[in-house]
Structure formats: structure tokens, C-alpha cells
Amino acid sequence: QVQLVESGGGSVQAGGSLRLSCTAPGYIYTNARMAWFRQAPGEEREGVAARTPDGTEYYSDSLKGRFTISRDNGKNTEYLMMNSLKPEDTATYYCAAGNPFSYAGTWYSPVHYPYWGQGTQVTVSS
Image (tube, rainbow, N blue to C red):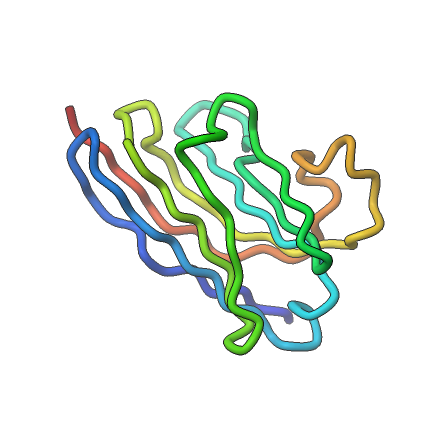
């Protein structure tokens, strides 16, 4: 079973920053569109950002400017830098890996990603 391992979640006050990390096996990471999703209690899983191996980035319109996705190919690790955090950003954040050639217009749909991490909790207090 493919394992994506997330880390970096925690509790922070509004206005603060956190950086999430996701490490994947090399044979998955090298050729995957990597993405971050989040899910708050009672809500659907929401696409936050994604990045393809060629460097194309996708962001949720509501989060662009505060969140930045990046990668370290040498470490098979994807990052999500989250700045100016708000209480409404509180959620479990998931890393996912999928086919980089799936339709980019719906990059935010979980159906494009067969591989998932276990999730890391982010709590933002006011």
C-alpha cells in the first residue's frame, strides 16, 4: 500500500503561519500531480493546491495568495506553506498523489488522486 506521510500540522493563532510536509515514495512522487486537500467537520473535502512535475501550480481561488505549494525533488517531499491563517482554515489537511495527465480543469476533485496520506490537523484560534 502506497503511503504518503504528512507532517507539520498543529495549533496556531490567527495571522500565524504553518508549513505542511508530505513525503511520498520516489516512484510515485516523481511522476505525480501532488495536491493538498482539507476537510473540516461536516464539510466536503476541498482542493487547496496542486503541482505537476513540470511545475504547473493550481490553487483554490479563495486561498491563492496566502497558501503556496512547493516541492523538494531531492527529498520526494511536497510542501504547503500557509500564511495569514484564519480560524476558517481549521481542518484536517491531506496530501494526495495522482495522474498528472488527468483533466487539469478539475484538479481539485479528489477522484483524480488514488493515493492519500493520513491527514494532519491544523487548528487556528482567534
